[in-house]
Length: 82
Image 1 (spheres, rainbow, N blue to C red):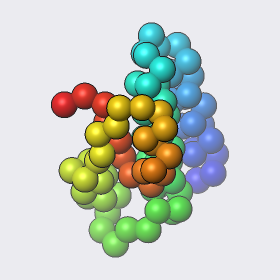
Image 2 (image 1 turned 180 degrees about the vertical axis):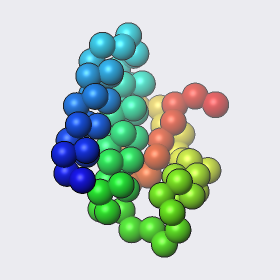
Image 3 (image 1 turned 135 degrees about the vertical axis):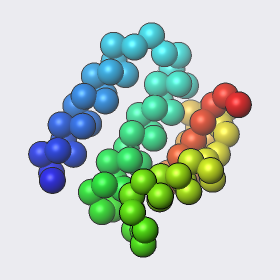
Image 4 (image 1 turned 90 degrees about the vertical axis):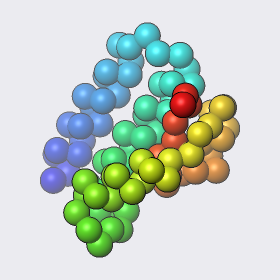
């Protein structure tokens, strides 16, 4: 499992390094990717299956307007555009 988590971090980080996203969009993607890895590695507790937990987290995601906002929502999914 650890190898899969490490591989997913490499791939998603590489994608962000190669994309033309603005800094805030890149930071948001890296933030949300980390939360996904933590969910699947067991660092975020959930009772239902992981897909249902992601659905719940997506519905409860927080709109942010700065990178500093993410510091307040370390374990929450975030978004930047409606």
